[in-house]
Length: 379
Image (cartoon, rainbow, N blue to C red):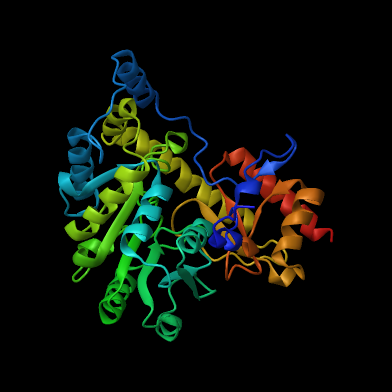
């Protein structure tokens, strides 16, 4: 019989098994996507493009107009200096991460992850024959542990992949921490892959900062973002990536031979979305209020420790004092409290932790946390 790629044996499917909707009586805290429908003005722009017959091949990295708009958005919103010819539009952020690993890494090399981290990072690295190096973050606030990073890096390490604001921890790295990451990358000659998909969702005193804007960061940072979270466009599968010219030339080749380009009729809608500031502000404000509500409801629950989430829409609870491991906790919470959670053991270095996504209504947050509290109090 013909064989399959040996790397597949080492790859899981992340949280995929938790995306299947549970029974209707279950409060679902599992899916990391906004519960809002894409704003109507954006949907209508895509419909108009279809009606206008925009169904043909176009420029592979994305239309010039869209790429120019992304470059302008990044500059105006986050002070990221780039240009139209260094922007690539791809079918979602997952694809841009895969292109970055594919275009900049080689089989046998190592990619450092600050963990627990999104399970897809680990899977993609392994798919390409590279090795993920999981460096545990500090358990009290989920921020980088630089001593652990120094101990883990080797001459095989060629990249560090960071995500701030972070999934699953909710951490937002400080300017000082980002500067230290850049110095660490310079010292060890590493690429920095910076997943900034949650860039608009920070709940702390410091703003989101891209390492590409800091001294020493521009020439080694790949900035990854997209439309899924901030514009409630997860199903559209639209992401962007930018970086130094030599890196982008490699990514362009990966994209041209893997996807050609994203659907032509989606590009005008994606461009329009970048100007929908009021719609984004409304959704962001809703997430801020939900974060406050989930912290209010979780505080003081027996056996749970909750470091304050600083960004994105996740809470990562430490459940070790309940006497249950995270897999048992999540299983029993579903069966006995009718609350659906993500166990941390699905991610390296996530043992003893459980993730809540508060991308759901205030009513669901109140009811779900009430159920968890009653369940734990009655054990």
